[in-house]
Image 1: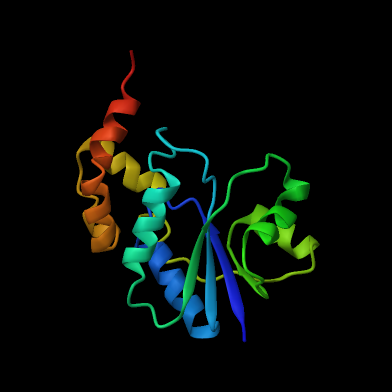
Image 2 (image 1 turned 120 degrees about the vertical axis):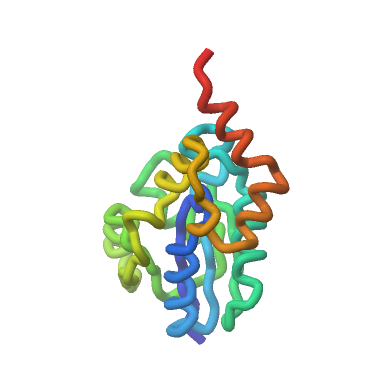
Length: 168
């Protein structure tokens, strides 16, 4: 049995993430998805709570042909301890999937097999771009799975983001 690990902030979960997880599902029996920076929310860079991001993921991946686990992971602020922290919070896994240079470095140093999946349209499928489009009133819905649109509407996410981005 092979189990892959994929971590992201998912602020919000978007079509690029969906594409990567579909790739991982083709080469793993199960996937562990780490919701990074789980303790952070209600900021311009991290407007959604860990629970909201778990909803985005579980609803978007309902039809994924591979069992998956979504695990919130809080930051520890010490990179040298982060891999051990992740391992303590998740089911065991044999391969890490990431294109993030720090994640790749930390898991490689820990002796874990790391693969860097192809990124899907990285310039437009980015949480930063999507959040900016929300702030600017530009269309963003086509960049995320329909289930994510529903979650963001359910929690009034665009309104929240615009409110916290205001200056006093």
